[in-house]
Length: 511
Ligand SMILES: *Cc1c(COP(=O)(O)O)cnc(C)c1O
Image (cartoon, rainbow, N blue to C red; front, side, top):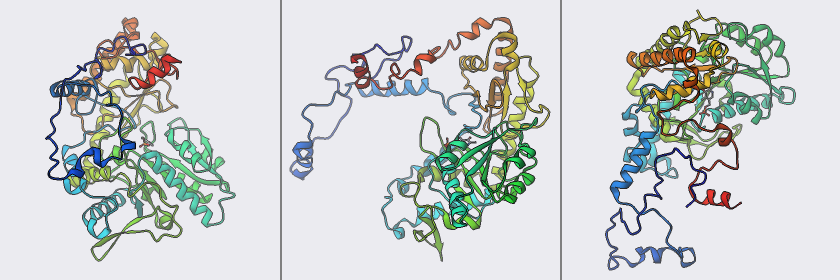
C-alpha cells in the first residue's frame, strides 16, 4: 500500500487499512432461482462484460463502516455541527430539516424526468409555483429554473443579453460588459465565456460604483453592466437609480448578481431598481445545503422584453394544467438536462413556503442585524478595520481588513483564519473581496443566535490580543484540528497532490 503521499499527521486510517480479509458487513437474502432464473446476475450481464476478478473492496463489519463514516463526518465542519459558519458571500445558513423531508419524499424521488407531463402534474405545479415566488421576491416578469449554479445562471443571463442585442442587430458593436472591481470573481468569467470583453471600473472611496468612471466606460459598445447589490463589501449601492440610467442611456442592459438576496428579501427588489436580468442562488439565499461542489440552483429572472429568449423548455400553466413548452423559436436553447436540479429547487420551495413572505422579510432584517453586530464590535479592535466608510451600515455581510494587524505584528489575515479553526469555528471568506486588503469577509447569516455571535467575537478578540503578544503561536496554528498546518506550496503542486487512494498515487509513485 502506498502511504508515501499521505499527510504524516492525518490520524484517521483509510477504510482500506481497516480491512480484514473475510470479514463480512452485509447480508443479502439468497437468490431464489426457482422464482426466476433470469434474475441471476450472471445471466443478466453478458459474459464479456462480467468481471474476471472480484473488486478489491475493503472487508469490514457493519459497525466498523458506520463508525468510520460517522468519524469522518465529525472531522468535517458544517452548519449543523459548528457554532458559526461566517463564510461571506457563500451564505452558509441553517437548512431546515423539513426541506429534506420534502425533497426526499418518495412521491418526488419516484418520478422519472422522461415521464409525460400529464403524469407529473404535482412536480410541475411545485416548480411553477416556486417560479412565481422567485418573481415576486425579485420583481421580475419571467424566469428559468434550469441553471445548476450561480455561475451558470450568470452565463445564462449574459447569453440572454447577447441574444437581445443580436435580435436588435447590435451584437457586432455591443462587445463589452462593464464590471466594478468589487464584483464577484465569477462575473468576469461568465461574461467572457458568453463572448464579451470585460471592462473593469474602480470603486469610489465608499466602495460603491464611481459614477464618473461608469459614465466614461459606458457607450455604444456597452452590452451591459453586471452588479452585485449590496456589493461585495456589504454596502448597498445607494446611487443604483443613477447607475441604471447611465447604463440604459448607453443602450446596455443591467445584470443583477443576486446570489445572496439575504439583505433585501421583502424590503426592495432588483426589478424595481432598474435591472433587466438577475440570477439568484437558491442554495444560498433560500437555504439548501451547498459547498464541496454539491448540486446548486441558480434561476434566472428577466423583464418581459427578454422572456422569449429564455431557455427551453418553459413550465406553463393553462386552466390548472401544467406542461413543458418547447415552442420558443428565439430561445437561447437548453442550459441543463431535463429541468435543472429539481431537488434543490424543491428545498428552496419548502423554505419559502415555511417562512412565508413576512418570514423572509424578517430573515433579511436579522441577517443585517447580525452582520452589523459582529462588524461593529470588531472594527474598533487594534488589529482590524472596516475599510470604506466604517460608519456606514453594512447589509448581510461585512468585509473586515486585518491590515493593521499585518503592519503592526506581521500576522496576516490567513493566520487569523487558521487560528479560528482552533476555536472550533469556521473561518470567514479570506482575501476576498480583492478591493479590501487582508480581507476577512464575515457573513453570520440570520440563523445564528447572539451566543454564537458573541463566541465568534470573543475568538476574534483573543486572536487580536495574541497577535500583539505572542504572534509566533499564531503562525503555527491550527493545533487542534485533524490536519494541522498544511504545506500550501506542496498542495498546489500537481505532482504531489493526491486525492484518491491507490490507483492515482500508485501511478504517481511509479513515475
Ligand atoms: C456564490 C456566488 C456566485 C457563484 O455561485 P455558484 O453557485 O458558486 O456558481 C456568484 N456571485 C456571488 C455574489 C456569489 O456569492
